[in-house]
Image (tube, rainbow, N blue to C red; front, side, top):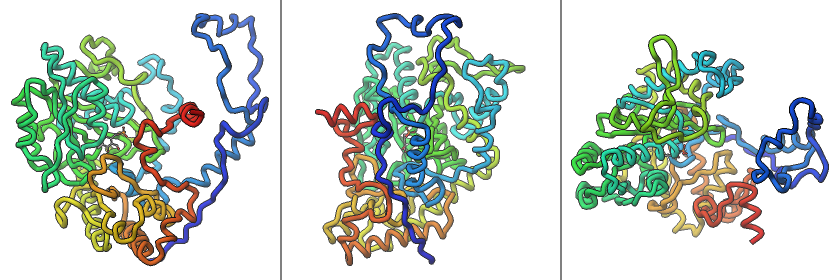
Amino acid sequence: MTKRIFQQARWNEKLLFELGSEGERGMLIPPFETEAGGRAENSVPESMRRQNPPHLPEISQVETLRHFLRLSQETLGAGLVADFGMATSTVKYNPPVNEQLARDARLAELHPLQDERTVQGLLEVMYRLERFLQEISGLDRVSLQPRGGSQAIYANVSMVRAFHARRGETQRDEFITTIFSHPSDAAAPNVAGCKVITLYPEESGYPGLGALKAVLSERTAGLIVTNPDDTGIFNPRIREFTDLVHAAGGLCVYDQANANGLLGVLRAREAGFDACQFNLHKTFSTPHASGGPGAGASCVTEALAPFLPAPTVEFDGEKYYLDHDRPDSIGKIGSFYGVTANFLRAYAWIMSMGADGLREAANLAVLNNNYLLKKVLEIPGVTAPYQPNQPRLDQVRYSWTELLQETGLKITDISNRSADLGMHFFFSHHPYVVSDPATLEPTESYSRRDIDTYVSSWAQIADEARTQPELVRSAPHNAPIHQMSDPTYLTDPEKWSPTWRAYRKKHSE
Ligand SMILES: Cc1ncc(COP(=O)(O)O)c(C=O)c1O
């Protein structure tokens, strides 16, 4: 196999806020014509007006272009590498033809406040995409309003809450989840003001029925689980789980962000779920991996349908329209109607695949994953905890612990070194029940050659860890990323800075 030589541009690039100088301008805004109706700010109440101008970068056009050009040289570039290591984040091929459609001015230049009669085409795409997702989930209604998986999970949890409240069962405020379900499955009920009960796995990789029975009560609002979860192990007794929850009066929410191995194979309805969500930016091939924006789809049974986010898209036999008159709705989950460009991308992808194509994608994703599993387990020092040597669905949470104990290196050293070999640095989100984890998901998009290349890079790093540990410890050498030395900067609210303002606040303290 030919190894590619990887050497990436590395600029000592500052933040946009740190570039430029006072008074520099990228654009001169024409003076306001007062005759046109007075100053706009006069229509904003005095109490709501800014006291100080916003802290915006002051920078020329050419410097701005250079800044972004340099940044673009420091990215790996979508599709350039086999992106298997995004930690329970299905990253698959996004066919450029779908991009072409989504960028067409007839979609890209629509305004969300346009009259419904002028956006019949887009409403039809939304309506038809919803029907596809109904069929794929087996459920009865869909909302495309959520901006991503977590928002859709939150919408589903809120609908379950509203359902119980409507029946006067406000004491139902407990959600049961499993430790290997995605962290959003615990976070969403927590944000919705519920208590979260977490079940831990047995040897099999999933919790026993006894553990579930022990926590069910008249306070149970619902079950919310990912299946298969981050380990790639599918809980085959899921129907018994959902039946037990229903018998206790609760409802069941399925986190189907990881639906890629199940398309056309298993539906939320038959598994006994009342609600599920899909991430269009994963399973349905719309861009992902910081190429976003994402889009989530909330699917529910008829019993939960009255609570769907408003407005819903309806068809009266002649025209499509938005129904805002939904008195039991949980309200809006985001502004306007959702990430419409992704609806068209996902719709186009489903249309091009057809029902058989979707099932074939699922079969290939599972095949690819099990080929990868077999190859990875040939690398001494890497293991796949729970059910070793058993097939998994679409992903596997591996552990590097054995190699790290042998060499004294850290998981971040291995991940940093993988960036040197031209790969997205891998990670796994918390909780770190599998120690020193790396979650890989090869999807249907990658060839056997891609998988072999990926595995040979891991094998090379494992070998270097034993023979040249300093090379690994001081990585990355060829990639522009900084050393990722402390993953808690991604998981600890005390440390992360999602905005420049938060960064400055934390660093000035
Ligand atoms: C199983 C699962 N659920 C939920 C999410 C959250 O989706 P999003 O990142 O779109 O909010 C993810 C994404 O990583 C996931 O893998």
